[in-house]
Each structure stands twice: as structure tokens, then as C-alpha cells.
Length: 310
Image (cartoon, rainbow, N blue to C red):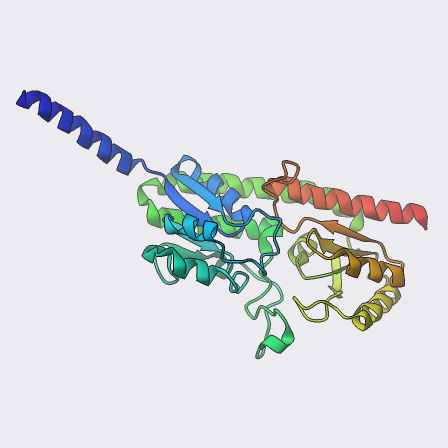
């Protein structure tokens, strides 16, 4: 009888220890691109949840209860940083009750501090300037080169949490980086004829994509980032864009149509809307590869249509 009880206890303890040893790391990220990178580097060692699904404007998000619940059970939380989530993520973290994922803890990381950022602001910054990011443009996830830097940070984060898997994580990160190199090469080939193309953005969401593929962004329709442009601003920038030879105005899916249409009406310059992020709920845009190719194809198509209508 005692022997049977010992046997049962042994199997119970073995199962418990086994479950603990092989439990997946629970990772919560703020944007879909990070989900893909963590899954590529961590594979079967991680379970990854993205708080945003790509449809939102990441600057303006509410600290909803579902976010708090996800963070409450996380082993690690990784954000973009560069003040992108400053309006909502601190509230989520503080309300989660999860001590290990608070800023400064082992379970929290900001990936923007490991990326070569564009448009770093020099001098003092205040709210009268709009939604200015002093540390630089946080929308680096549209650059395959920057995503390789993201994978290196992800490798370090996972290796600290599961050091026994470091070699596996290194191999996986290298494979992801090779994939990004191949993606950049194929997309650059599509955009080769558009090198030097002058475009204008509504908001600086595509600066990294344009820089990656040698397209020239001549500023924004916005006067101040995050502040709706006035009619006078739209008129002024429409006329200056026309005089400068801008070929296309570009907004994201969440850019209000009326601003783009008014710009086009005054300038005669066509506009298009493209995804500023992976869209987890749209199977046509639910990966980094799909978004890169979608943007490239639509730029080529928009410029081809303009050439025909000249």
C-alpha cells in the first residue's frame, strides 16, 4: 500500500517538475511585428500575445481590461518604447499587479533602445509641439533592417530568461535575419524603378520603409504630429508639394480620408492608404512579408496609374 502511494507521489512530482521545466515563456508585446519576431526566435519555447492587432493607431489606445489581464500573467512584456505607448502602457502595467514586468525589472523591455532610429529630436520638447518623440521615430517595424536589430534584442531577452536554450535561440534569430535579408532584396527589386520618388506622408509612419528603399519623403501633411491639420495647413502643403514634384501622398489605414482627399483636390497629387503595421485579423496582411509586399505593390500600382493618366 505504501509502495503504491509512493509510486503515485513519484509520478505526480515528476509530472509537476516536468510541467514546470517545459512550461512555455509567456510573452506579451505591444505590436504584431514583435509577436512574429518572438515566435521566430523562441518557437516552441514561447507563447506570444500582441496587445494591438495592427488596426489601431498605437499612439491613441485605451488601457482596456483585456490588456491588463494579459499582462498580469506575463513572464515578459516588450514594448516599442520611444514614447510610442506612453499614453496607455504604463497604466496597463501598473494595474496588472505583475511585479516582474514593471519598468526596470527583468521581465520588461523596450526594444527601441536597441534600434538605429531615424529623426531623433535635438533640443527641448514640449506638448505644444504635438506628439514629438524626442528619442526618435518609433515606427521602425516597417524596415527589414531594423527588424534584424529587433531579433537581436529578442534573442538577448529570451536567453536571459531561458539560458539553457541560448544556442537554439541564436540559430533561430540567424534564420530570421536571413529571411529579412531575402525579403529586403525582393522588395527592393520591385521598387527599383521608383528610386528617388518624392512622396509626402500624412504622419511619419513610413519613414523607415522609405529610407530602406531609397524613396524621398518630403515631410508630412500634418503640421504637428498627432494634431489634425487645419485647412490652411493642407492648402499650403498641397501647393508646396505640387511645386516640389511630389508624386504621391500616403496615409495609413487609420488616416482620416477627408484630409487626404482635400490635399489631392488642391494639389492634383494622388493619394493612397497602406498598412502601417501587420494586421493580425486580415490573412492578406498578417505577416511582415505580406505587409512589405503589399506596400511595394500598391506604390508601384499607384505610380503606374499616374503615368498612364498624364
